[in-house]
Length: 134
Image (cartoon, rainbow, N blue to C red; front, side):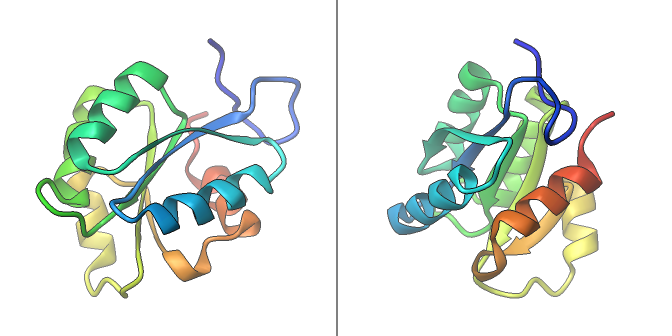
């Protein structure tokens, strides 16, 4: 299945997997993704292990990954996603500010950090445009 490399190209939409233990955020993220032209919500997961399974099956271009989840947190999940699917762009999301965002994203393989309350179509497009694999 071809992946989209730029917004607006005649290709498949940019596929997004949302991972969060809170159903309400998964719903909000789905709405934001569907409101963003060129993007498609292809799946959701409520935990790190579910994310790894879903990512392997769905092969998303972009993963929105909650930092704080019970069991396997987002940092460990990002590390495992990087190993299993190095072509996927992983974006950490949290309600809280992360104090060492650059160090954390670098060490776990995430491309970026976005506060949940800032997630909107413009931010989603910006993250993709900045971090997509060319």
